[in-house]
Image (tube, rainbow, N blue to C red; front, side, top):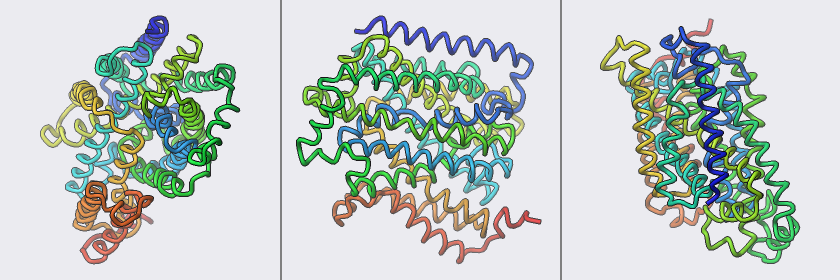
Length: 481
């Protein structure tokens, strides 16, 4: 067990959380129960904090350990997930984020409700909450892997310890705390990755040249060191990742929660200069590190997820390992924080107010905090199933594609509540059938990702039902002077 590394990383996380919480609590002593102070940081953050928080919210398990895991089967093409997320950052900050803020909505469900009515809005709130809680479980999986690397303890024990720290990370001060912690962790994580890459130059048996030689030695793996080396994976992985990530998070609470904290839309649009590079570049080094682990046959027996941690534990000096663990843990904690806060916000703002329309900000904050604890417990329990992280994330994205399609239709063409409901339900059924019954393999369409199916179904059904059903002019067309 790397006891020194464990103690150092825990001290870093606890001290950083405590210091930021104390400072912000004192600074905002008289604003604790103001509108949106916990969930939305009072709506006054500058572009830098908005961009960094958005970047790290959507930069977690799929980017670090998930990309290392993917690299074991697809090589450096795994880095395309980061490139896809850079596209997603552009969509959120330049297109959908400003659209959602323009409607005055605080949640994705409220946004859809303003377009198509309360029934559609509540349906999307439920869908968002369920899928995002599933993503929390994936973040908890990566947190558990990080603790397992430091301690050698069982996965379940590590998930429990990580869960306690993850809940603490967000519970004390809310969105503003997350924003400032993300600023600290963004700096740390890139320093850590650069140090790891440099360290592996001397610690890898034969260096990076040996990794290249090992991959090139077999025709089955020669393409794994080429970013464009497998056209099938570009079509079946890279493009669907960009498509699914952009369309799902573009109108989901996970993408909107950081955007809602901004001072105004000008700050939202400026935030791309922070969100794009921080999020989009991250996958490059984890992909290379994952390929390095795969190139050493001795580590392959640990399995796709654990071979990279096993290699790093053996080869890295303790100070570098400590930096990496603190950086990776900070990334996963930041993602878990907003991903747990997002469904909690949906419930407290969209659902609790149905029962208690006069709920105060203090009551909603208490409920949000309680739900974060519940989500943490659920995530600890479910993360033990350990699915393939990136595959599960990309599958979840498919459920958000019809929401994006209908939002565009409802904003700029025609609003039909009936058409929206029909499109959502039919597309989700098609996604489940395509994913569950092996149609992809039966038809011989191995690279026809479920995101393509979701987009095709939502466009066809959405356009036909919008034409056929009665409705009003698009929301933005209606209000155009």
